[in-house]
Length: 312
Image 1 (tube, helix red, strand yellow):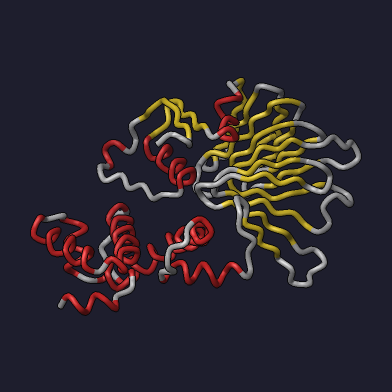
Image 2 (cartoon, one colour):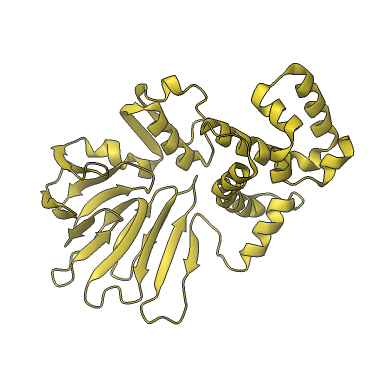
């Protein structure tokens, strides 16, 4: 029976009842078997690790371990694995595993560094260029007008080939800090899924991750206008932040310590009365890991503190 696992993919491991039992129940008898098997077949470690993550994600979502659930969870974590191994290909000289072989094939298409550039060039006169920063990384982009954009982990910035001709419009998914060059004739607009931020020349931070219920705009200097659907526009002053609720479509503007919301640029993460599940999502992006909260009773507990990325 042991030999059949040598040909298993991550999804096949996740579909195996004995393997599922080991991950879910963690019984000593099962643990002995799998510990010995992995030790004797170290070349399958990565497939085993990915399969464990698939099962934990399914269990975390309180779903039964079906073929569909395995497939959905695999699709959820596959992009993270490919991007992570793509980066590791250049950091180590280890032999290619099945995942780094996939990453190596993508090297031809991508320029790898702290920033992954994906150029959408479909011949369209209004084509967009995407700057994508994977989880666990940060990067800076200087636009053609001189504006500097600092992108946080798990973020994407897009701009059209027409950028700067009549207006300066960019699209953002995730979090970025903008230091905008002043140009009264060409307003700078940051477009997110739920709201737009318009400025002339200023420094501000926008957090608009797709899986977050709050879109936050924090102003360091200058003045910005935040335009939202079904809600009146808000003018934000230096030292203020606008918190827009995706669910209620209401906005609140208040004075804040801007450093708490912009210190991610220096590798720091501040949490103030945040739920554990929100903290976990932030840390997942920051450290490029998957965090499973097994006890849902503590997911809503609130915590205050800070992390420094360089700390172990």
